[in-house]
Image 1 (cartoon, rainbow, N blue to C red):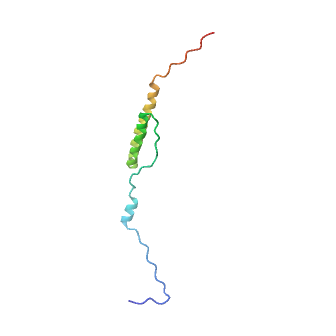
Image 2: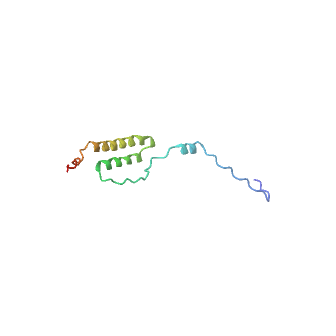
Length: 98
């Protein structure tokens, strides 16, 4: 082994080059994780059930979210449509003629 010359600087170590395994790990999609969006109960059981269904998307890959969102949208739309079908209070009587 040769002795380093006095006053000579050591050469910097080469930077590591990421190999194929590092690239593959970086390209892998992240695991599904809850978004942490809070849902406030409405007090209407049917509506709350549909809103709770949104939590199912927390455990799915993004490709599965659309099915959950469409299902919830359909359920909420049907609940609103049902409100139009219910008989409401009777219409007020016309004012009496003087």
